[in-house]
Image (cartoon, rainbow, N blue to C red):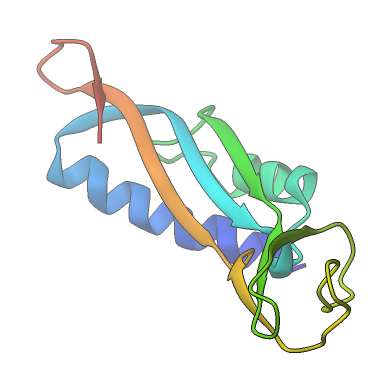
Amino acid sequence: MHELSIARQLLDIVAEAATQHELKRVRRLRVVVGALGNVVPEALEFAFDVAGEGTVAAGAELEIVEVPVTVRCNACGAESRLEDFAFLCPACGSLDVTVLKGNELYLDSIEGEENNGTGPTDD
């Protein structure tokens, strides 16, 4: 289950950001995940909850934004969203396509409470 590894890496990033921005608690994270990453959202949420216990992100909400696969056909120029992983152009049938979206995996935002008690912050 590579979701546990991803969760641990997210928590490392969050801990560093919390220190840098003097957050006493992280309340919410938004993670962008492309369909080609084979990340199971429910498994990532579970792994994040378990790995996050005892950290600044304990109990934080994890929002996962899923990005579908989008390709551009190098033969006809059409851009298409693929519903399955058959990498061929739906417009002309060519196998000569370039992936434009679907490989993403990044932490988009962190929301937390500052140590000075001034309330939420968005980083």
